[in-house]
Length: 115
Length: 111
Image 1 (spheres, one colour):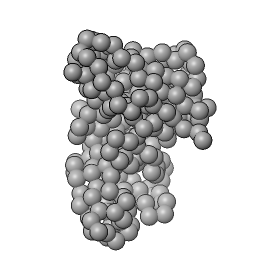
Image 2 (image 1 turned 180 degrees about the vertical axis):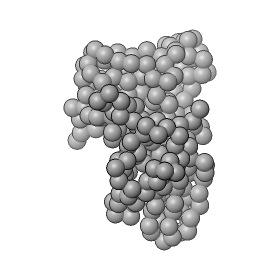
Image 3 (image 1 turned 120 degrees about the vertical axis):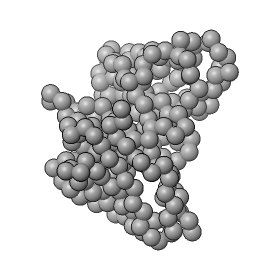
């Protein structure tokens, strides 16, 4: 049973427009969420994170929104650039007994930004 | 330069052979992880280690083994018991379970 779901396997966006990548989760114990970016044949790189005590976190062109009641988070990239073309993974973890649990990853969304 | 190295980048083995994938980090991180990625799949956790001389099974540990004799090193052995060993293997490290930093990966092909 997938605890972290990225229901769109792919997304195509025009350069300069907004990219919105979505992620849903089922475990209400998750309290920390991360986005990773991955190019083919390379390791993922950390992009941005958000704690459950917040509903928004911004870093340059990247903003993550968290809607706890809907168990949904989204990553907004504005403006989108061709170099943003990659696979984006959503990940989540829960705090158990004084320590943070393992990261649970979604299956990823492949973003293509067209010039 | 601090980082995580995995070697080799590409590895080819015959079915029935054990193979060991290397992972080294100089970030002084306590925790290290091994993941497997298959096409169209997310990252699935194989093993993790929070401190030296201790490690725990992840979600798909069958057919794999690890050791953690040094803080910097966390090698993964893919044994002949692993039914579908061909995959992209990723090693990561962190000081907490929050942001994990990944190596470049090893593509293992078993024929």
